[in-house]
Length: 255
Image (tube, rainbow, N blue to C red; front, side, top):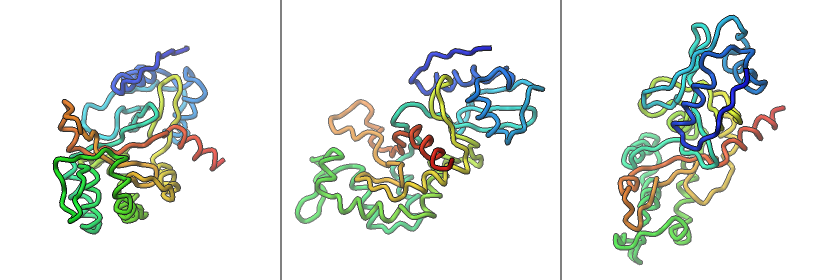
């Protein structure tokens, strides 16, 4: 049985497409790529004796869909596109989280200053009438961002942030089992336990933006020109650029 899905960049539509792709199908009806994914997901304990069930998660959790085979249910996060938003939360919640991680107050303040982007006077007072875009801010205060990045790019902190941003979230007790990048017609995946190794392997990357390894951190939108979505200015967004390429290169390096 051939299943053809027209790709769609809308995240919710893509999740529904994956539900339609998996639900009610038998293992043998899938293409080779999907059979390999299902073997990974169910540790090779899958065959044709029962069809697969799949549904969307209606809760605000990291899992977007669930895949069930017999009595086993697996949680899947789905991303598509080049620049994937993994997580967002209020900047004040993020500040309190950094404090719990024992990040020095000075370094936390460096991030907060970057987030809002206010230029400072010679006596170091914020000029609330002048908000800088990201590149303008970096030109003036890159040394402060370097300090912040140095503080958070430590193994224990990276692992904790992977849990918060990708695997579990801040208000859930449940982890994802795998992350898919792409659409039903063209996707790759990475298992939860490999996510840590992949991201930790990139901790030496030197981004000018606030980041942990390959994940960048910043305001969801700066709203410098009075954009309608002004509330986005008070949210942090964690993004992973080129996630599909990173997954492919990670597994190629292991083969």
